[in-house]
Length: 84
Image 1: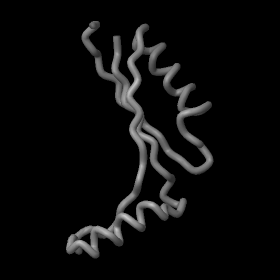
Image 2 (image 1 turned 30 degrees about the vertical axis):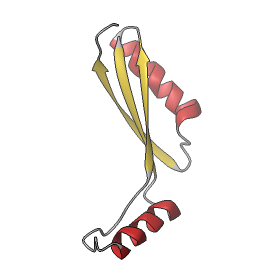
Image 3 (image 1 turned 60 degrees about the vertical axis):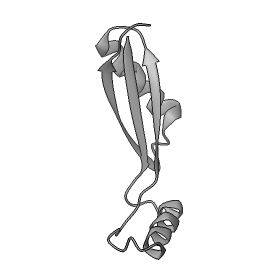
């Protein structure tokens, strides 16, 4: 069994208004050392199968549903998880 964390972020060229708002708010709160904020999402999946198959299936899921490849980048980490 594997635990997969998928990290989805906007591509660098895509404007991130939510990140800009958080950056502005952090600066307003006195965290002036914060220069930039980019907002993304993390999805956690638990899957069975061979590691190579799991990797291929997660890539397929990201391309089809979990990320919008036009405006978002993704990466994922696969860790072995103990069966419950």
